[in-house]
Image (tube, rainbow over all chains, first blue to last red; front, top):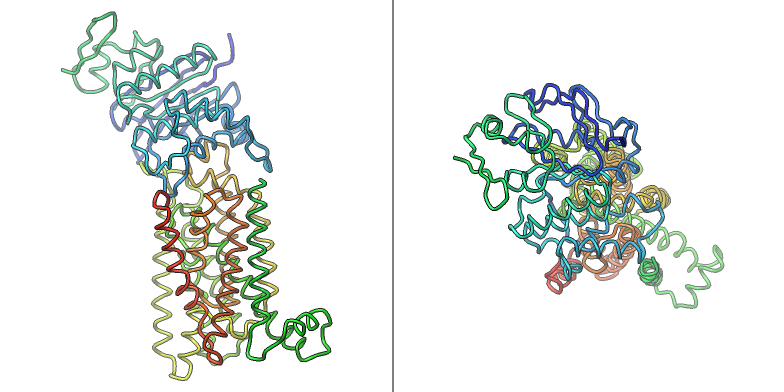
Length: 257
Length: 333
C-alpha cells in the first residue's frame, strides 16, 4: 500500500464561532477522486482551506504524502498539492498565457526566467481546458466560465500530486463541466493523482467521483466509496431535502423532490 | 530577459538625457563646452561652481525622489491589489506633511522641516503597521479570500485623520508662512540639497525587493493562490510595505508630497510593457526618476525667474500623456 496523498486525523473545524466538524478522519490515496458534498455552510471550503494550509484547524492533524503539513517548506508544498479557490479577482489585466505560466512558479529557481519548455507545458494545459487560441486574450475580457478554465489550466501547469478544487465546475456550461471532470478523472486513473473537489451537482459527483466525503449541518460526516455514501437516506438527511435515486440509461441519477 | 535589458537600457538613456538637459538649463547660460569642462575639472570655475553646488544636487534629488515615488507606487498597487493605490494611499504623506508643516509653524529651519517630515512619515508607517498588523498576515477572510480591502480601509481612514490635522495647521498658520506650506504640500525641489539619502534608498530598496519580483507577480492574483503556489505571503507583504513606506518617506522628506508620479508612472509602464514586476520595478525607478527630473527642469525654467511647483508640471504634462496611452489601448487597463 502506497503512502496516502492526504491523511486527515481527528480534524475539528470551526468558523465564525460555530463548530462545523468535530472529528474528521480520512485517507485519500493516489488514483482516487473524492467529491466533497454538503449544504451551504457545512464546512466544505473551510476543510479545503485547512488542508491547503490557509488556516489552522481547531484540533487534529493533516499529513501530506506522509509528512505533517507544518513540516512542508512552501515551495515544496506547492509541487505536492495545488488549490483552485472558489473565486478569482483580477484587478490588473494579464494575458491568459501569463496567468497559466504562474503555475510554473514553484519549479523555477529565484533568478530563472520562464523558457520554451515552460511555454510548451502552458500550451498543453490550455489545450486540455479547451482554451486553444486564448493565449493572448486579456483575462479581464473573459467570461466567468472561461476565467475558471484558465485557473484550472494554471493548476494543470502546476502539476501537483494532490489537486484540491473548490467548485471547479460552478461557472461552466454542461459541455465543459463534463470535459473538466473527465480530464481530472483521467489524471487520477493514468497518473495516480489524487483529487478532492466540492460540487453541488449530485449527478456529476456520482458520475466522476469514486469516493465521497459528505458533511452535514449537524457536524457529522459520512465517507467512503461513492455508492455507500450517496444513498437516498443520507443525502436527504445531509441536505435537509428529500432526494430520490433513479437508475436510468446505465447511470445513477439523483433528483430533488 | 533580453527584452528587459533593452527596456532598462532605453530608459537609462532617457534618464541621462534628462540629466544633460537639467545641467544645461538655468538662469545663467552655460555653453556645452563650458559645461563639459566644469564637470571634468571640478572646483576651478564659475561653471563648475554652479554645476556642483546648484544644478547637480537638485538634479540628483529630483531623479531619486521620482524613482522612489514610482517604485513605491508600483509596490503599493501590488500590495493592495488595487490600481488606484499610490505611495500616499496608506496615509504616509499625511504624517510627513503634519511633521513638516508643524516644524514650519513653529518657525524652525529647513533642516527641522525635513526632520519633521521624516518623523511624521515614520509615525504614519508605525501607526498603519500597528493597526493593520493582523491584516498583513491574514490570508483569507470568509468569502473574499482577500485581506487587502481591510488594509486599504485602515490606511484611507488614517489618511483622513492626517488631512484634518493639515487643514488645522493651515488655518492656524500666519499669512507669511502659508505660501511655503502650500509649496511643500504640492511638492517642491527648491533647495533640495540632500540627494544622497534618497538615492541610496532607491538603490537599496530596489535591490531588497527585486529578488521577490516573481513572487509579486503571483501575489497580484490573490493571497490564497500565492500561498498555494509556495509564496510566503505574510512575510512578503510585510517586506513590500516596509520597502514602499521607506521609499515614500525618503521621497517626501526630500521633495514634499509630489503627486501623480507614483500613481501614473507604473500604470503607463504597464500599458507599454506588460505587468511583469521583474521588468516593471527597475523600469518604474528609471522612468519615475527621468520624468520628475525633466518636470523639475521645466518647472524652474519655464517662467524663470518664477519657480513653479514641480507637481504642477508632472500633472499638466502627465495627464494628457497618460490619457493618450489609455485610449490607444482600450483592451488593457
